[in-house]
Image 1 (cartoon, one colour):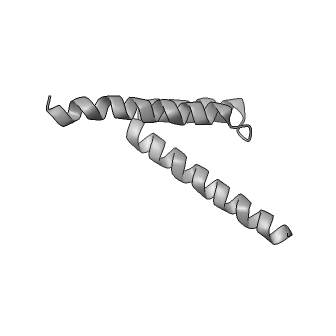
Image 2 (image 1 turned 60 degrees about the vertical axis):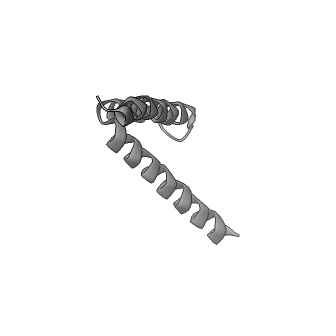
Amino acid sequence: MTDWSLLLIPLVIIIDGLAIWDLINKKQYSHGMKILWIVVIILFPILGVSIYYFQVSLFHRNSQRKHNRKN
């Protein structure tokens, strides 16, 4: 293994752990959806986390737009 890969593996594990921790603390997802996201994040560490955070940011942006329209 190269030197940078020794840094990359723990970094991916930390980012995956943070994503799973964030997911567990979300109240808007059902238990089944949380389990599905956890499986995706574990099976596809980099791609799963990327899709999860992209989806979360889209959800947050859409909820902000709906909130601004109500005011």
